[in-house]
Image 1: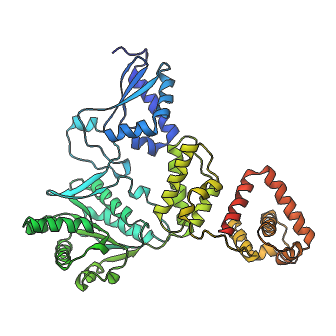
Image 2: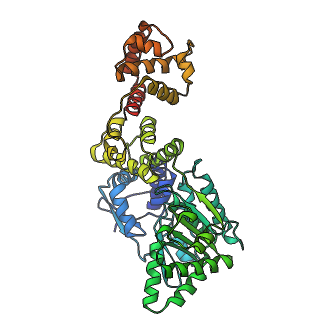
Image 3: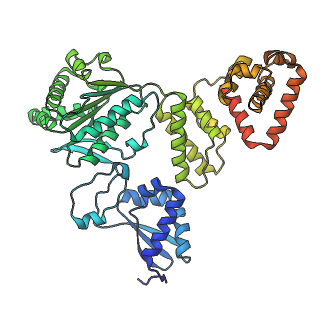
Length: 475
């Protein structure tokens, strides 16, 4: 086919397109989805782009078609549409750069293979494990006070995979649903394969282990099944609390002992500590608790805020025009307290709402979308003590300063906002509000209310802050 005129050649023009995509979407999105995209035929107003997999072709069509078309038209103005197709032969693609798994391949294949995220199914000698999600790496894990021990231990285990003996074996991670246990198991597996591509890694849920063992019993191949498991380098078991049946538990305990005694790493995750897994026999509980036991506690506000901020940044980078303000993030972090999945789900809903309605993401929109995720549907009665506590926390000032005679701007404005909220959300009179805010005259309270109302008329950020405080106090 005849190419449209391009004095620098299609390759150089496509390089410029990719450079602009990197600048618009960010390095992480570019590396995940665009690094391996190549330009093919250019003819009749159609540009053909080739990718490595059907999954990638469908994803780019659905999520980035308009973005790519706009950038392509900057180099080829006559372009009317794009066509994505899968390159042949079909090569196995690699995960993102922070979890890339180098493999011994020929230089020809290595040159053609892109670096793109796809699930990887672990396995050994014909036994197939559970798939690894390339998004669940150490790079995407958010560390806070409630999970830093588990994260540090998991990272150390992964880094020590090439050494003869790991310092923590077995490593037992426990905590409620949605706190990141599975994320760390996947991250360990990716990091081990990155450092030592030839390592035999097997990631299994307890249910998958039971299923494999039952199938081996039916096929009268249980001995070979056990021998396969005992020759791997690192075994990662998720949802250990679901391991049931005395025979299966006994065989798993033998496998566990064999691996640990042979210097092979074992990492286990469950919703409770080993001593509280009543369905497991005492010997297994003792062995699982003989290494390092790290609890992943409920997320505090700071960690929830960090997770929401990171996920919102990722969503905004992948969605043109989407903006999630700090006020919305603070509101969600205060209200959604159950798990990381709940937080990620909220961001997915905000993103979908924007894509479907094209409406800005406000606190009102956020509240409507995640209403079913929040606890306490009935508004509670607001007290002035609640207002003092919430305003003090939000603006980082002491309650005693709000009640004092200090006239610093950093104190006066939160004090005025507190008085405004007291008038708006309680049935207290102006004199009573004045008394509760440091024995002030009712005229001072009235001045504060009018001042805040005036400022809200001109200051969008202040309106959002006060809307946030109102919702935090009412919910």
